[in-house]
Length: 106
Image (cartoon, rainbow, N blue to C red; front, side):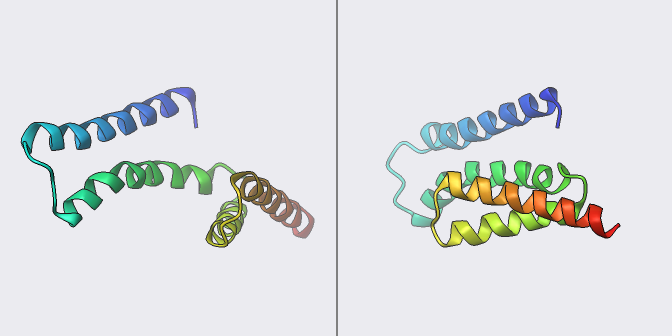
């Protein structure tokens, strides 16, 4: 992923965040009480960020299998509410181990 890709991604994320908040402020004069609309406006920036980052996770390694392994380790540790540092280091270690196994078996 190049610097220009990252900057474009940050710009898109900023626009999505701004637009979802601005639409709520500009079009609706009273407080939104519908839980579905509140939930939609709250989670849309996170879902856009996830959609933009996920392909980079899988394809930034030498093989897709190491990316899948790192993602799986991160999801499992996150499910068990481990800290960000533990999740990151364990995912990096999983990618490293899988890459080394692939080199040894090839």
